[in-house]
Image 1 (cartoon, rainbow, N blue to C red):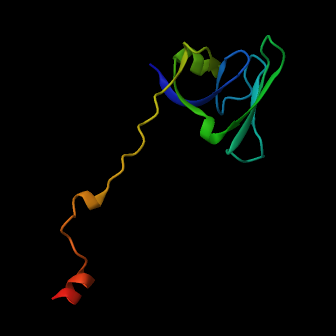
Image 2: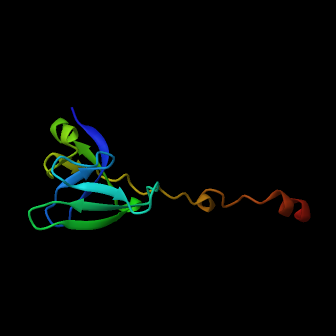
Image 3: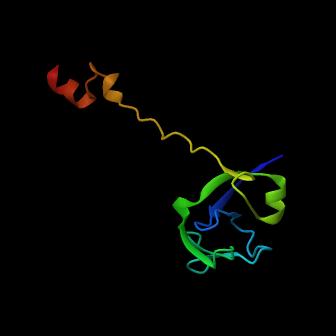
Length: 112
């Protein structure tokens, strides 16, 4: 069984980390950029390519489908933690296409 969780990805090693599981058993940790705020995060990854530091805005956080093993660890590979496709943009509705002959009540009063 998998779960949907928010995650960020280290740009150096591509490990994906679940938000709110910090600190992680591999030595990495994720902190809010501003205390008690969820608008921006800083990821300190202890990957093999030196300490990777990356900054994430809330709008950049990915919704991901997470395997059980990755959920227990709080992090995983791109195979274990996969982004969920974003919902389509909300469709727009142009009422003028359907109300061609409609006139406002104020205009009807003046024309009768």
